[in-house]
Image 1: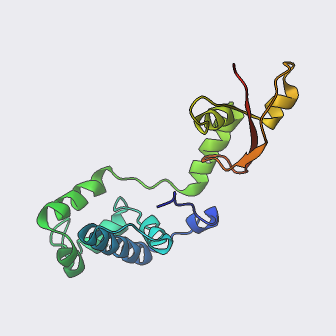
Image 2: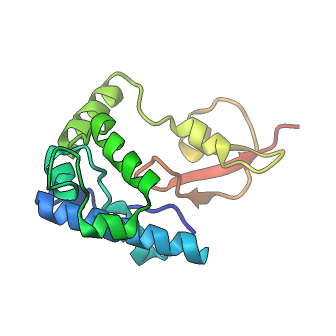
Length: 173
């Protein structure tokens, strides 16, 4: 299984009405149950379904799951899908869960980047190195005053970075 990535963050800007999010939560829970029972690994399409699970922190969602009274009886769909312990966990998660809208998350990351606390490219490059290898970006090599003989240049796609990074191994011996 590969790391899941959204094709575009635009899909996170509008997650739909409470009814749509409720239905997507149920789809994700059903799929998770199937994967757990069959011991399967989710396909890319199934990862997309799982990614649409938003939890139950919204009062609109928890009221759809337990419509008869204040966290009283769950819907038939919930009862058929979850056991008693899981229903209790679902109820309690509504008290501690909070969904942060994407524009707020983006603003927080913009501030972190402004303060110089964004994803550290050097740490990602270093983590990609094989045993006994020191990787540096070609930009670092170009700026370096040291005469080192780099190995072949290769392109790496690194988690947390938006564009591939050109790297080369240098001889450290």
